[in-house]
Image (cartoon, rainbow, N blue to C red; front, top):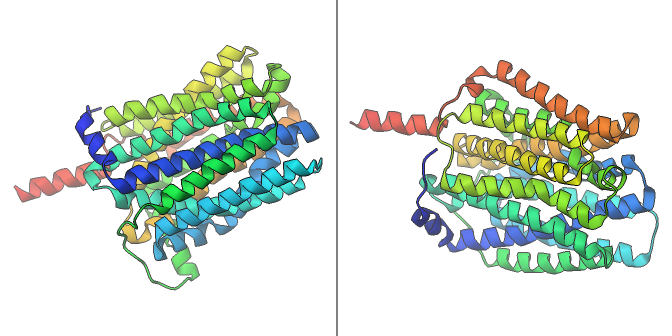
Length: 420
């Protein structure tokens, strides 16, 4: 790793668009994380069903999967800043609908799933646009720093959000949803204060050919395909965080505040890791670092499943988040460095499908397996499966597992050599 100067980092933050975007994203993520704790605990209190916890993930992933390729095309043909702004406004609407549901006193959870379907639809359009727009806000030499800062602010929100959600839930879920709505209002205002970043607009009409352009690009790049498919299958089996409400209640015999701390631990690990990456970005042994991060994720999941100690579980979840952050950081740089701007939205959409499947579909898989053969067995099985996937992908994609530097670095070095 190479040391990053503090001056370089501050230069990125002096960019008004970047600072406003990161602030808006931080508050929006904080609100969503608070909501996620409240929704999980509220649904489990009403139904006491592990399967229903899994459905929370499925309700968000199903519309996401249906819409994401179209969303990628929209991100390449329309202003990405405006797309992000509209999606944040939709998230605000979802938060207000959850307030209305709670105040109604209903004990039927299908309205919650309906709101989550709308939320998943908004996220489908927001994810490729937000991933692609960051590349347009900074110069290539500053991009890795911007990614690390973006990850840091995101993970701080992931840390603080669940804790606030757990603490505020003591006063009722309506309080959590109300505070989330307020934060989303501020996030929308901040995003509206940004100016559109230059982007290469693709004006091709919608067709199956244009919708699948990102998928064809990923399939033609073994390095990119290996990186994002590793995340898909590893986290798909290791998505034990969906079971945390039941795990806290039934295994650790803890309440909503402790659940908030457990939900915070992965974010804490990821945040400290991302801060380290902002100062010492990974430039050598890229492949081994990525596979090592995924292996740590799997081992930490197994540890969490085997323990009955709250503090051991907390440490395991912390390490889980740190390992995941390394993988996310490298994968994001690989995808963005390798992708031309005119198809960056569609490639980001394909990447979002893999991320969404590994998270929401992984939550559904965890809920399903837990309902089949028990909570603890499901968590341990997921961690072991992640380790198996890591070893298998090292064999399937040897060029990725042995990668020393990012491809753009080699291209820059070759260009410099040719110029001399």
